[in-house]
Length: 285
Image (cartoon, rainbow, N blue to C red; front, side, top):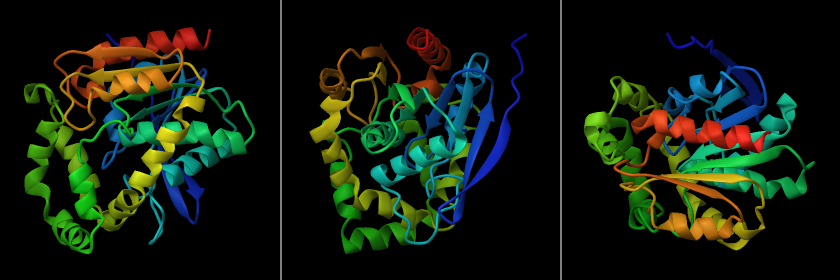
């Protein structure tokens, strides 16, 4: 039988609110950052696998998951990256492997860039699963609409009543919707419907283009061991952008998983976990 891993639910005061995170395992530190409208729930198949050899922290980014955020808080990528850096400092973590998917992948890249203004050595390596990046044009028109007065008003009105659309949205994130695990919709929907979620989503979208253009300008300065993982049926972040990002990250490794969509850690968890474990063990040896 597989080993049962104990997972602790924790809270950390931060910026007048509380940061929620899960913690498990022992060993070198790995910090997990979820995607847009997601939460630490997305790592439910990854965290136990990594915790057998690593100390794993799965954060809920403020305003976009189970963590609290004050009204008017900046929930953009660069702002979230500063919170991640504060978390590493508060917890006394060094030589961390930072793993992010989608929006969380872009947050991880910003966190590395911000190390120039902080004591070096906190982040040792990167694992990026379909990270948001400047070379993917998917979703650009929707984000442009949501930056208008009309778009913001529509989101504020519609998001609290969007439950009926959640199954459709989830199916689009999978290459094969038949592989959606039981309980997945029930895990994500409450996070999307949380009170105040629309304002925090709009905050992130407001600075989205500025944040990704900062990555375009500075990505070449990131010189850490990195692993890119992408499903070739991703409809959220363009798989073709992987090749460009690979060029900008010297020496990175790339794993492409055929037949899989935007959430390889959920749709093909065994293959994803094997690739990540091998990379982390090699980068920490």
